[in-house]
Every structure is written in C-alpha cells, then in structure tokens.
Length: 203
Image (tube, rainbow, N blue to C red; front, side):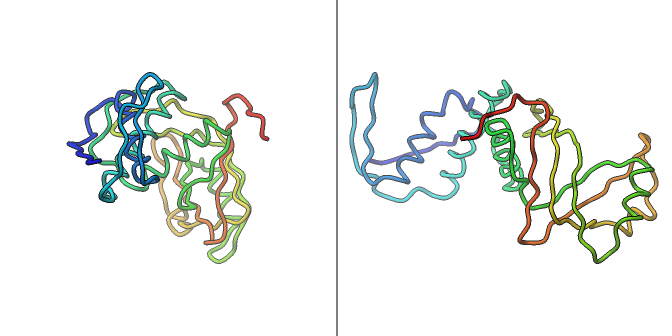
C-alpha cells in the first residue's frame, strides 16, 4: 500500500477524518484493510513508515473533529499549529469529554485585581511553594477561531508565583488587573475541572 498525501491543511476536519484515521491505522498496524459499507474493498501492507509530519497532521485533524463534535466549532484544518497549542487543544478535549484535564506544561497565567495582587504578595515569597485553587474562564483559540469559553476551577497542590518581582511594580491594566504567572515543580501538575459543563460520571 502506497500512501500519498498532498496535504490535509485547508480541508474540513469532518470531511477528511477517515483519511486521518487510515493514516494512523497504517502507522499502528502492518496490514490495513479498507471497508466500504461494511465490506472489504482493499487490503495491503504499509511499505514505508509515515513521516512524523504526516502523523502529526492526522492527529490534529482527529483532534479538531473531536472538538467539533463536542463544541460545535468547525473550521478548516490550519496549515500549522504549534506543539504547545496542540497540547492545549488536547486538554480542552479532555475537559469536554471527562470534565477534567491536566494543564500542559504546568504553567498558568491569571488576571488578578489589586486586592488579589496584594494578597499574593503577602502570602508568597521568591522561594516558597503554595497551594493554588483558582476559578477562571478557559478561552481557547486555534487559527484565530474561538471555542466556547468554559468556566473552570484550577487546582495546583504545589505551585510557585513565577513573576513576583513583576507584580510588585506592575501597573494595572484598563480593567484594573495585572497578570500573575504560576508554575509547578517538575513532579507536579495543574488539574482543571469544569464548573459549567454537565457532570460526567466516572467509572
């Protein structure tokens, strides 16, 4: 079986989802069988390993199609999406599917008002970890397309205020807020739980 890909970018994820599924199947299995109307129409061996770029594009198509089903947001597959953005999209899919997700990279930026800034500076220092529980609105975009915002609660058992010095001198924005950045030690994660999506029973 020879696979020739002219490019998945620009096509609607829902339309090319079967192609993406086939590409990932060709990576996972030595023998591939194609069915139409539940009847096998072709069978063959994948001769050459697919490139990482092709597989990443196929995974992006599947991810965007899953998010289309979950959120109703539908747009053509972008030509390029940064790995960090793909990780955030995957986490957003987890949030919609399971009601919770792990924030990629263990970092979080949050807008805080003057009272919140004063409290942060009072209870933290440059070298100590603290426990974080914060309510936020997850607003995710991809290729300038916005997904519906989700009200979430973020949990961090051990985090550190990463921009304390900046907060000490920052001037509030026109909305009266400043940005606080938190980061986790390598062995810790930030967990996000939905406050606005229907609760999903866990097995």
